[in-house]
Amino acid sequence: MIGVNRRIHRIVIELVSPMHVGGGAQDLVYDSPVVRNAFGQWTLPGSSLAGVLRSIVTRSEGEKNANASFGSIDRDLGDASSILVSDGELIDLDGGSALRKTMAGKPVALPTDLRVIEDHVRIEDDLSDAPGTAAEGGKYDLEVVPAGVRFAVEIECHDAAGNSENRDRLASALGQILAGQAPLGGHGGCGLGVVRAASHSWRDFDLSQRNDLADFARIGDDPTGRLPGATDDSPPTAPHRFEATGLSGSFSLRFETSGPILMGGAQGPLDTEAGADLVVNRQPVLDWEHQRFVDRPVVPGSGIRGVIRSRVVHALVASGRTHEEIETVIENIFGSVSRGDGRRGRIRVEGAILAETAGTVLQHVGIDRLTGGSLRSALFSEAPIWADGLAIDVKIHLDGLPPEYLSLLAQAVWDIHDGIAPLGGGTRRGNGQIRIGSNPDGLHGLAITVDLQLDGTPLDDARRLDLEKHVLNVRLEEVGSA
Image (cartoon, rainbow, N blue to C red; front, side, top):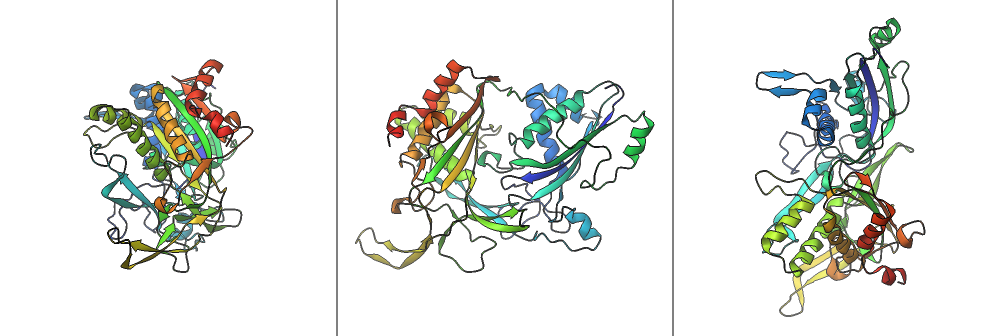
């Protein structure tokens, strides 16, 4: 399209999972608060979104092409970015910008003063001391923006006349983010920051043409406003190919509860009454149909990822590998920040927001292990969810995983299914037993869906069958008859 030199996207981004973009201010209550604007409203910094876009382009097309689109700094020299990303403005329940309403003195209906916390636990890295278990003092609180919250973002892309490279790169990278393949913010490996487009419009402007120039001049600065003559959909792009060597893509699992489950957390911000001492992690989710927050029990991706990591470590230790060999495999799969250069993980686990289910309060007492009697002042209560067959939908993303490690992940998943590795807290009291469900349309009748590529190429039938043997392991007949 000769002469086109501006493309503007206006996107309403909706959080599929909670998001954590850390704020710089110190907080005396929470370990890691989220960033907010001057009015205390959640915000999505344009620098965070631009950073993810640039990272995708760098990994797929190299640093030279990323610099060409997003600019570079080389001492006193540098090039400006051709892609400009605005800060994401929080959307109020009526679809307007909460920031602009506040600045105009109008009330905001969305209760942005909610403090939503996810409990996380760091895993012991020392493989010689309780490998795969929780680290001493490893619990920390992570504030998140709730799932369902929306932000309005404007992205402007410049191209020289007759050139579409920047627009094509942006469309491809943006498509990956909006498809959930590249999370926003921190702790993406634990399933945070997955987003989708609630709406997406765009238009190309040829500023050498009078009509386009006039329309361009009429564009307001409110990202929730309508672009004149815009197309209401994402621009077409080629199907994404993962550039990393190894296995990339995802597989989805539907687990079902078998008895009580207690993924521990703080009392939910919508709670109005005091609960038990130990409660299920609950978070508000923005329900746009009814225009209100609803409280839902949550199984964080960090909890599932931690169990998988623990079982992989256990399998490696049982195989007789050396400490150095085990450390290398763990870093290759799960990443590491313990060394100066760090290493990006090859697995990302999305957690699950469960159907509304009340907890069942149970009373317990601590036992003196020496006498077998009850401990004084050791009475406590817990409120696990006790609902057989409750669905826990989990999605595991792979990003360049060496194929030889797939059997380790499959073994860990089957350990969860078999009850060897129960999920959550109170497992010695019978909590956390879950199994892979059934699905006639899934892999061999199980609730497993696989969508993977090898070295950037979709698997052919032969490799897919080989992959299924790894995923299903040797227990298919046993599971199918259970």
